[in-house]
Amino acid sequence: MNTAEATTPPPVCRAGEGAMSIRKVGKIYDPEGVHVVALNDCSLEIAAGEFVAIVGPSGCGKSTLLNTIAGFDGLTSGEILLDGEPLATVDKDPRPGPDRVVVFQHGALFPWKTVLQNVTYGPVVQGAMSEEDANKRAQEMLSRVGLNDIETAYPGQLSSGMQRRVEIIRALINNPKVLLLDEPFRAMDTVTKSASHQYLLELYDATGKTIFFITHDLEEAIFLADKVLVMTTRPGYIKKTLQVNLPRPRQYSMLASEEFLAMKAQLVEAVHEEAVKAFEAGEREMA
View 1 (tube, helix red, strand yellow):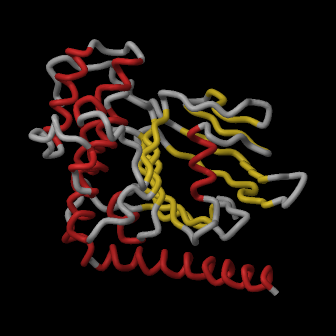
View 2: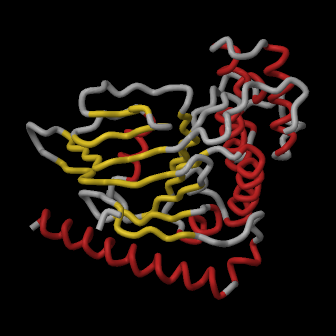
């Protein structure tokens, strides 16, 4: 059931880095009190360089799972391995690390720093790159996503789509093994979201990073990912795995194909079943 080319390149993840093994993971909040079981016996395998999207009803544990991978939350049971090494276990204190970087829906850019300063902050502070090298690398990466003319702008002067692109570049310049994206495009209009998808896919094709992507948008999940996982209502575990065999690079014309529509129908059915269960559970809790 559980189923850029760069003039001064930073260190690059070696081929095969970024594989994750999530084994029988459980997470209980306030085990001595309310006892909310967010995750239970949740298992999945993510290959190095794989783009995996997670879908499911609100409150099913998608963000909880991301937070345990990121090192923001500890585990109640199970373990998470990164490239075969323990990343999170019951006995291991949660700890974020530079090998995993998160981009959230609402963003986390420093409003008092320019775009260029935001992007270069991490590698410079960590001592991974000199300021000069970081600036060169940042300029090249920003140019790749159409942001070469906003280096001196501040986040408040940017559209939401531009801000997300800056955040993704800021994450990637740190050369993580895994990029964790928590509904980064949720609040965008259709045109902005479409453009953001294309930029993200271009960066994915160029870097080959492992991506763990949370979304409520089923079309988005299929269009972007190699594999879409459906989580059950709480307590969450993996109910269904959908392999997306669409060729890369992805084109928006694929959304009208019979293959795409058939995959979407499978996801709609699986997610709808869990949404109904979540609604009924909520009704019972209120009774």
